Image (cartoon, rainbow, N blue to C red; front, top):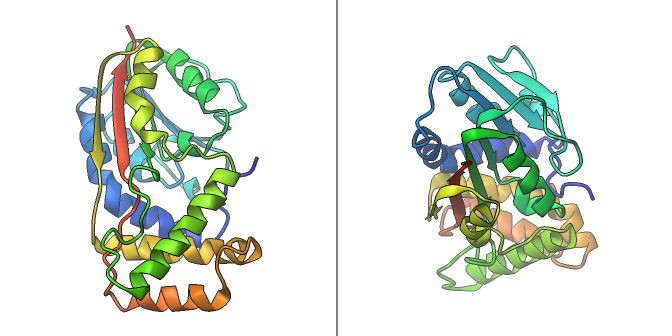
Length: 255
């Protein structure tokens, strides 16, 4: 089953930039908390853009960045880039000291097998950091549904969630991560949620996502062209207090 938010679309670059602005500081804090060292081997799963892999490459000996589509990982990078489908391909050779996946497994229908594959790729003592959204935990685009503009935003967000679910996304996956890491045999498990409300990058992310999906929303009868145009105008006027789904960051260590 193909990924709903195709990396080959031009909107993907704007989405990646907004996601970095919203979540990189949290991600880097959780990665740093593992005690990352200069001799570590790291695997950035579903990298999307170079942001996280580049941060890792500045701090450790080797970084492998993989994705099903490496469009945005090209150029001269300080890390290895490889096409890889975490849902279908065996893990790359060699044990890793640190493996990180952000906003990946929630979209993968075979997520249980994918998570097991990541755990198996850790060396003894290695760390796994998995960060995933939980759209069911906070399902609204505008938590303060104060009027028609906010109601429209939330209706379009419901359409987005419907498309995600039809592609096999597990909309309450993020909250399950601590238990899933423990069940996989990891220790020292900890988790935290991050929920940026009203950040300017929320509007960038909202516009890019809705533009990328507008054809699918219309074709599925989940929104009309007029509703999408009105919503994007509302986004641009800066009066919507927009929010993404909470990001759950979970960390565990292999014994």
